Amino acid sequence: MEKTITAPQIITPLPGPEAQKILEKDAKYISPSYGRPYPLVAEEGRGAFVIDPDGNTFLDFAAGIAVVSTGHCHPQVVKAIQDQAEKLIHISGTDFYYRSQVELAEKLQEIFPGNFPVKSFLTNSGTESIEGCFKLARYKSKRPNMIAFLGAFHGRSLGSVSLTASKTVQRRHFAPLIPGVYHIPYGYCYRCAYKQKYPECDIYCLDYLKKFLFKKLVAPDEVAAIIAEPIQGEGGYVCPPEGYFQKLEQICREYGILLIIDEVQSGMGRTGKMFAIEHWGVTPDILGIAKGIASGMPLGAFVAKAEIMDWPPGTHANTFGGNPIACKAAMMTIELLQKELINNAAQVGEYLKQGLLALQEKHPIIGDVRGKGLMLGVELVKDRVTKEPASKQSDALVDKAFHKGLLLLGCGESSFRLSPPLVITKNDADLALKIIDEALTEVEKP
Image 1 (cartoon, rainbow, N blue to C red):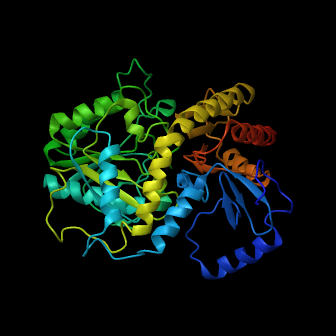
Image 2 (cartoon, rainbow, N blue to C red):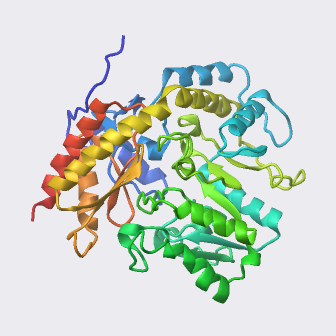
């Protein structure tokens, strides 16, 4: 019987000797384009913990970039994968039909945040999902232009990176990108681009669309869609103010613009609801999904009103999307989310957020704590008045946490994110808060 893991444990210098061997081979054979923040080599995963080849155990508050929603190797997900692998591994929905693809599409109709018929296209990744959203919006509307937000991350393929505006390194030397994409500031109240104050501003950042963009740069009747993350991910785990998405939806309806909601990182129970957009009661026309949908199996989807997804055969297809094994993993993942893990994300997420707010009282370097459920961001600043980003300190904190046995990821200019598996307990939250507290004390030293 395997021993239950209850806490991180570091037993060698990091990286250890076995991990170092893998790092050396990686440097020789793997593309250097990956942006690894620290030298974690993962060998095994169990629940909320990751074990490296040297036996070091880490508490995982990154979850494979918010992917392993049910924890590492959840036994019921593993069983679903094994059972399907014995029956059918691949057949391709491009040319044939199979049960698990249809079952998952039916389930996506059930959980979609809207009361109308929808249809789904299954993909391999978040990037592919957003690429599909982009194509469908242009195809259906017959309009050429798109509006996205500064700070947005929608993927790295040519279409999705044209919508992305998170870091210049993601776009540099790839021009010309897809034309007709316009970016405007997001509802980032802590760093308002217009120096306004909420709620007195009446969400001026969206008024900019009608007052300036639609008058001077692009006619609204030539805009296919506006795409937005309910909570920006790579951009800093930025959570918009109340009323923001309701106002955005009104603008879309006024001009006949499709509303695409990118739930690749924020969806599948992470924020304490199946989809983050549900916190604001807004209904998307097209929804992009991936990451947490299948507990680590490569799967995504874009889901749209049936009247929108009416393109003919041959218009859009793929070979591996909706793989039977990935679909079965997704069905079990959704079952576990609905039974317990969405509620756990809400409850433990609020507990964790309160713990972070307590750390903010203790550590002047914390400028802002934000997010919902288990999608929480902490922004570090050199001074709370000037809000000068503490980028080096944020990077150092993530590294120090790793060496103490906690896996975190950075985001934005000077923030770090907490996106653990949705199975974490309050005890896990306390362990993470203790390590973050220690790391903050160290990075605050002159």
